[in-house]
Length: 65
Ligand SMILES: [Zn+2]
Image (cartoon, helix red, strand yellow):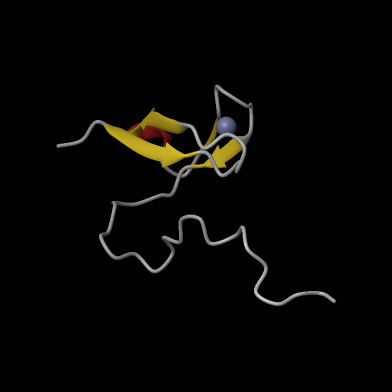
C-alpha cells in the first residue's frame, strides 16, 4: 500500500525526487526545488510501462554537421 507517488523532476538540471500524495494523480504538481510543473501520471504504477523512458534525452542521435 503506497500512499505517495514518486516523481523525478524532468528538469535535467534538477532531477529532484518528489513524493506527492496519490490524490495528486492526474494533476499537476510543482517541483519544490526548481518550481517546474510536473504532471502526475494517472492510474496505477505499472512495471514495464512503455511510457517510462528515464533519461531518454541528453545525447543527440545524429550530429547536425
Ligand atoms: Zn525540479
